[in-house]
Picture 1 (cartoon, rainbow, N blue to C red):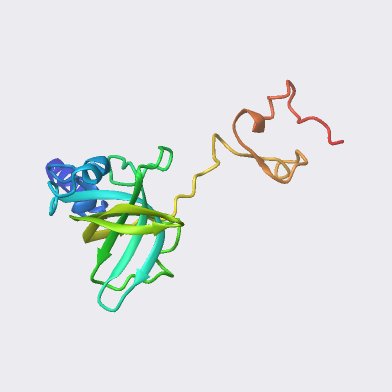
Picture 2: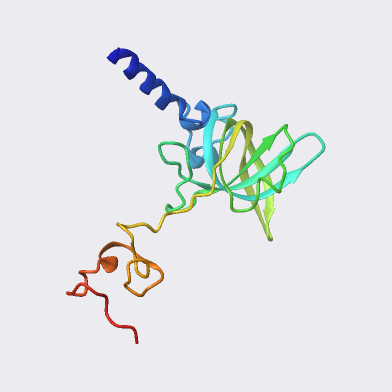
Length: 185
């Protein structure tokens, strides 16, 4: 019986992971952006997993192209926006990618194959950007950090006089040295 419960809990936890395996797990030979930029002919058709922030989406008749500002990825494949960006790259997909869904500044991770370099104009500058043929595209949900740093104390609900929450030590009624908060001015 205990074994059945343990297997059930384990299968539930494994089932909670909704990331595609190609996004969650890096390819065996994980080619970095700088390696692809330096020697793209040697790494042509190599599997890669890169991510970043969407700059632009262009839809043609037979494919869609996304321009992405590349960032390093964390262990789950999500772009690390707290690190410096690496460069830009292009992704081509045979599917229609709606610009209303794939919006500017959205976080994205792409698994696919490196097809080489393609020239693009950025302002008056011509750049050679790595081009990926996508196999899996994952658009990350918007991250909304919580401002909850401790137990909330709602003043006003317990007769303290303030109508908004304080968190952590500042919300403690004992923070000011007495039981009641300082008087309003």
